[in-house]
Every structure is written in structure tokens, then in C-alpha cells.
Amino acid sequence: MNTPLHRILRRGLLSLLLVLALSQAAGATGGTTTIGPERIRQVLNNYLRQQQPRFPGADLRFREIQTLPPFTVPAGRLSWEVTPGHPNILSSQRFNVILRADGQVVKNISLRAVLEALAPVAVARTDLPRGAIIGPDDFDMVTMEIGSLRQPCLDEDALVGKKLRRGMTMGSVFSQAMLEIPPLVKRGEMVTIQARKGPLLLTARGQAQENGRDGDAIRVKNLSSNKEIIATVTAPLAVQVEF
Image 1 (tube, one colour):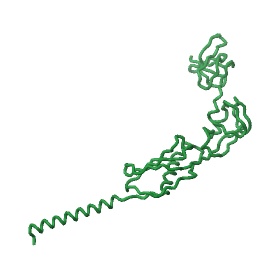
Image 2 (cartoon, rainbow, N blue to C red; image 1 turned 60 degrees about the vertical axis):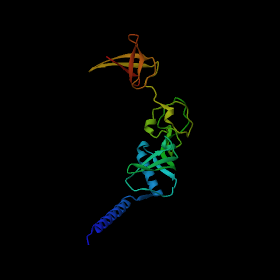
Image 3 (cartoon, rainbow, N blue to C red; image 1 turned 180 degrees about the vertical axis):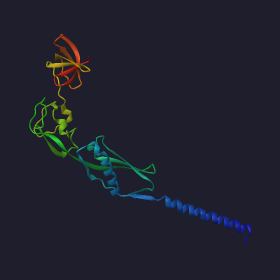
Image 4 (cartoon, helix red, strand yellow; image 1 turned 90 degrees about the vertical axis):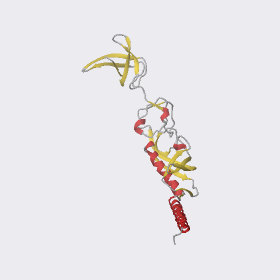
């Protein structure tokens, strides 16, 4: 029988079945994803590996990570953003984690995570006075936790030849802030003035009127003409002028 009433009922039934099928499909593709503490630990450790190049020679690891209960987020393509609670990551004991699903923020977490950073640090082998020029026998490289240290010296080659701004006691840690590059030329010293143009090189004796490091422009008195000139420091006791 194919009466108008039967045709209406049949179309209504087909429409209902279609709606149910679409609803089931939507439920299958929606869903949720469960995030547990191990996933959070993995995300933080991945972040730490990305930061490692900023601290060459240091061994970075989390000594403690707060355990959070599992939670669910909408299913989708997940991405993570981690930021330390302190501008200096080594001083930070809290980290913020933003979780996105398909680009939309679905979770914002702040958790306690204690970072440990071990590295060889320069330590004074003996008492050193202010103004001392550091030599290779003046320090030892000792592995220690550097999170609480301010600008520790991790490169022994960069330390040798530097000048101390203040005195140090045996066992204290070298800080980059207490070091400076000593001048190649000191005020009152006799220097060689060089003027070069192509293969031609002229030299004269002079007296430095001020201290100068490599590349500094300083006042020099030409002893031949008794005139003061501006010259560039190029080496110990040597300056150069334009010719």
C-alpha cells in the first residue's frame, strides 16, 4: 500500500534515522582525551631539553614535579606551551602549562616544579686581591648546583686573563660581574704608533694619555711632534692611526 499517509510516515522515519546517524557520528568524532601526571612530566622534560642550549655544559633536570590528578580535555590536535614563573628559569619553582586542542585553550595549569642545574663552576683556589689578573692556577672547576648563583663563570678559557674588580677569598665562586678585560695600554705607558697605507708602514713613539682596551680610541702624545692625536688600540703597547 502506497497511500499519501504511508509516504509521509516513511519520509518521517527516514528523517529520524538520518538524525540519529548524524548524532552518533558527532559523538564518535567528539570525545575526550585523558591527561595524566606522566604526560605532564613528559611535556616539562621536553621543554627543558629545548632550553638546554642556553646553558652549555650544564646538566638540567627536574628534581621534583607536582603530581596532579588526571583530567580530561576535548579530543583534537593537542599543543603545549610552557613558561617559567620567574624570568630566570633557574630560579623558577613554578611553571605555567597551557594546553590547546585544535588551537583552542582547553586547560591552564600552574604547578610546582623544582629545577636542578649542575655544571662545572670556577672557584678561587686561593685568596686573590682586587686588580689581580686571573691565571690558570688561580681557580678550580667544581661541579655544583648553579640555580642560586649569579652569573657564575662556566668557561675556564674565558676566565684566564680577566681582571678582578674586587678581592676574592679561597673557595668563593667567580661571577662574571666581578671580572673585566684589562687594558692593553695604560695611561703613561710608552706605545708604538703605527700608520699603515697599503704596503707602506710608518711608526713613531708615543705616550698614552689614558687607558685603552682592544679597539678603544684613546689620546696619545706623539713624542716626535709633541702633538696629541687620537689612535686606536690594536695590541699591548701598540696603537694605530689613519694615514
